[in-house]
Image (cartoon, rainbow, N blue to C red; front, side, top):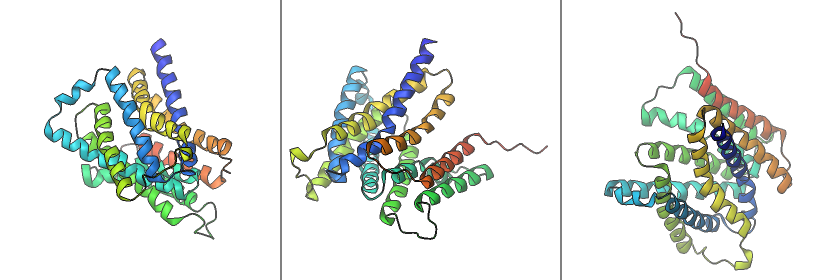
Length: 297
């Protein structure tokens, strides 16, 4: 019983921390560029991950990695955190937080689509219907509730947030191929991803920043919570839960709490179209997971 309660506590913390990410992104981007946010938050996250691995005595597993595994993980770091967050932060910089956050939840749909050419999965009727449903939700969000007047939202931002879902889904598929502890994958990825972010900032002339302009709390939230310890808390919740599926489904509460935070913290007016579109996207994802058509006899 105590284990069950702890699992739900960790799940609640995961939902709470990830729900605040959209607000933290928007606050940080009011003061610094997306590249600067990536540099500072990824470096902080790398430090947090180092401490977590050291305290859990997993750092010794780094010595057990082969040269090919090291190379693979370093290349994965170019996908996440570097490319994924570079695109995502740019999208948040151009779009309302509610739109960028909601559309980012299309990544399970992109995962299902990419699984067809990469893993040779068959796209059945269930998957096709759920994908179409989720994309209908995305169209409602992108229209901002006004189909007669498209273009209210930044088209580049919309393209970037959709691209971020493709990048994340690709990372998930590529990462799943390597039988290495998930925390080790994340740590090595952040080593190379952080190095790439700082190198890019250096060559693009974006390293210059006034200390007084740094949004310390927002960067701390992104680096410590969104990119850092929340991942470990979530894994722990899944490991301790008697029913991991039930715990996993609770994570879909996150975007709705995120909308609440955006409204309360940033005074962002939540459009009915955003809420409706998000509900449709989540329904499409759940439909894909649980709809099992009856077999004909």
